Amino acid sequence: MAAGRNCFIITFPFLFTVAIFVLSVFVLISSTFKDSVAGKLFLLRLDISQLSVTIDGNTVTKGDVSTLPDFYQVGLWNYCQGSRIEYDSASESTTGYSYSITNCSKSHGLFYFNPITVLEDAIGMGKIENYPSSIDTALKSIKILSYAMAILFCLSAIFAVFQVGAGLFSFHSRGGSLCALIFAMINSVCAVAGVAIATAVFYGESKALTNDTLNTSAEFGKVAVGLGWGAAAAALLASTCWLFSICVGSTRSSVSEKVVYQVENPVVPHQGF
Image (cartoon, rainbow, N blue to C red):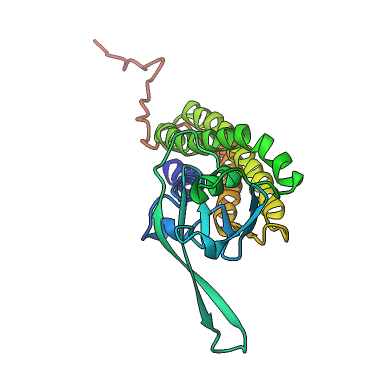
């Protein structure tokens, strides 16, 4: 009975731990590959199909530079670029757009997306003069925050693996559950902090880059960031479940102990002559 109860109790934190790892991996691989699930996940998408910038006093538009893509799509380690395809909605009398990735930049361990630098390199005509100060202000803190965010997401996935390892020893040992709980608590801190930074950075950047002066628009990556919040929630639930397993789990062996009865004062039969 004790083994069955322990197995039932520990199943839930194991499931939450697996969920942490899977969801964290989806965030980690966002926008790293062209044709895959990763290509559909992004933290920020910058649409520059109507771009208009001022360089050396001259106005340069998207149509003036044939090598410019229609959009940039940002992940933790790199960015992708591609073409925006217009289509007519069948259910509504509106025009929609789909985005097709053509290529992605090389992944870097410590990466952050600076749209002004990327655009200046792609245009190749000089410095952009007409971007608003709000973008410049946002970019000052993005570099360090992007590094911290990537590290925290990696640590979350790593500690999820540690939880599984410690959990294997928790069936008949509260020590194993305690180790799993410690890893889960560290995981929770990393997951919550990482996704909170991602939300603040990319939501703020999407607002700053939706700009009438540059004729750009930016979309916040709700799906990828939502997966990050899912990993954070799973980490908190895993911590709660590991704590519960320590409080109510049994460390006794399920093998019944053999009971030996011993007569303390044996009666010696009377023997006559």
